[in-house]
Amino acid sequence: MAASYTFEDLSGATPTVSDNPYDGLIEACHDSAAEIQARYETHRSARGVQQKEKLTSPDFPGVTIDTILAKLEDQTIEPGFKDPRHCLVFWARPPPHVKLVIAEVQKRLKTVAPHLWVMPQDSLHMTALEITHSLTDPEIDELVEQVRPGIPEITDYTYSHRARIVKPSLSYDAQAFALSFLPAAGEPCTADPSRKPEDDAYTYHHLRRDLYALTSATGVKVASRYVVPSAHLTVGRFIERSDTEAADGKVDHARMQQLVKVVDEINEWLKTEYWPKDGKTIKAGGEWIVGEGKGLDSRKGALWYGSGGETVRLGKGF
Image (cartoon, rainbow, N blue to C red):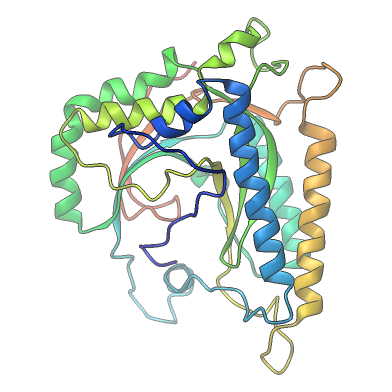
């Protein structure tokens, strides 16, 4: 994946005069959790339709291989290869019940794409804030020293600001698959029975806004690619084309159709099993209060795929 890869916001216009890029959506949604959830869902569903059309089109040129990950996984391609892109991020680590759902999603994907690279359980993460994504090691170390005074407050922030996300769904494009969630908006809560519907007024988007503000206050310029309304964890990437090509090396459109069909089946299963319905509490794995178990993980280094890099500080969980 190119370091410059960005996501298009398909949720609608968010004009704002604020220097904080997350303020626009909150203002456009009148600071309403229900409206914010709707905007996240609009983006997710619109992107799903867009990508489904692309991948099932007779003109689809084929999946996009992550060549850097392919080299890291198979050192015979370029012996001694190391990812040159160093990052500085704040990650949210999923709790065990969410990881179990992801493991099942990955298992189902592998039935139709056996050569798909899947994110190891211990590497799973949701990028709450990306400060920068493709600098050198010395450049990152310089930024770490600049932001370091604010890191304790930022990594512990989810202890006192508990944003909840719900309604998992599998999203995809020609490069990768991700499990995405929506900010909660008063749905019944299983993870914390004492939680009230009004507690969802502080959404995951509010959390992202605050993390941006706290980081910017240290003097560091936030150069994130992830401002669009999305709460997602990458669960798999394409590192070869054998699962989607015919013997002649051309795109096997029937296999692409089958892959999309499996994604649709996974999403129907997720919706049936893990979405709230009829006022009942959500099955474990269908929601996540960010900060459960672990606070935010301040990470630096070559960590594009979750396993590299190192933790600067891990925040306090609850």
